Amino acid sequence: MRILVTGHRGYIGTRTAPFLADAGHEVVGADSDLLEPSTFGTAPRGFPSLHKDIRDIAPGDLEGFDAVIHLVELSNDPLGNLNPDLTYEIIHRASVRLAEMAKQAGVSPFLFASSCSTYGAAGGKILDETAEFSPVTPYGRSKVLVEHVAKLTDDDFSPTFHRNATTNGTARLSGKRR
Image (cartoon, rainbow, N blue to C red; front, top):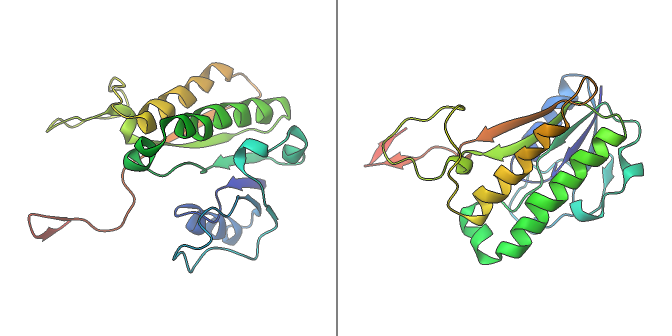
């Protein structure tokens, strides 16, 4: 399967792209290299790559792919709060545009890295994927807006949303490792 992985040089993408390649898939990345000066020393550099901002991806860039795994984003609630307009532009509008182009190009499945931030602050409640959306930040609200591409679902296009929890390694709560 030929898979376009957007954000293949970001935090999750640096693990996803090699995993897919090791499973026998042909991986092509798309990344603006916004995080290039970061400490992601394991960023995959050996993959063919579109060096483009997600907002500049064109319909022709999707030709020949069997699937899209869309990981590009501004990475969290605090970062999204710094510039809400940019958050909506990159996460919401560019992601919806990418899904629409993927559908037009006949690329399915379309996997979107959403977020548990779509649920908002749950307090002590345990939530599952049937919980109501209640985002409290531009980041969470933009993720909810992208999930509206579910309306594009048909026999030829299958968007899927993975609502990641915080993926920053082990956490220490009350001095205990979890």
